[in-house]
Length: 253
Image (cartoon, rainbow, N blue to C red; front, side, top):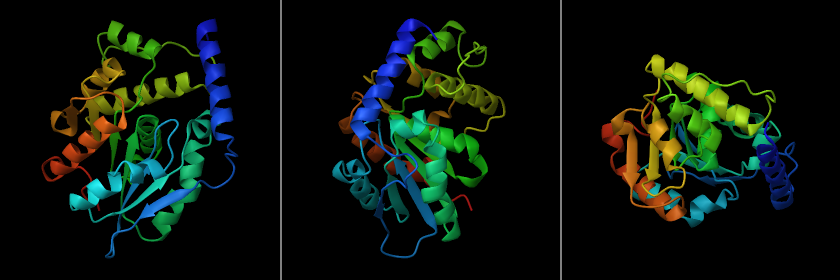
């Protein structure tokens, strides 16, 4: 890893440890919003880098969903950057949510991720594609500057050949492996259940456009806005409004 990238990586670890002071071996906190009736559908929401599960309530994601007629149970999970850095993100979701809800009879499970939560949702979906109906990513973080440049210089994902990254446990490597998987799924036309939304002024616009290029047009929502919760609300509302046409959040079993 170049010195500049190493400095950024170490700084990220320092900030994450200071900000969260998390014991990643402990169960994560969950915030539920259950439908009044009985439901076999569940939406798992993952927050951004410095946000908590409560942010989905504060930013009216639960309310917007209910007003749009969503009858699934919803649960937001306190998954953070430190879980990802410490190789515990997938394990915590497996232990604290996924296994339990499968045992409780939930059959139709969707992930909704915002920013870093979008990346985490895609990484989990990458491992459990057959067990998850689909993924909705709102202003997701899907590539760093180096990877974005690689993809652009190659002329897009179809011609891209990943470079060798020595440290296989870095976030940089996770991003690369995600795009390798996306490349494979694109060739098989297997990304029909991935839905993207972003603001036209998002700071990650270049990587988001590269991501958009491998998805169905009907699966992509764009609004005026930046990389913030105001744009996120607009995106979520627009995604839900068109869900019957696009298949977003529809049962898969």
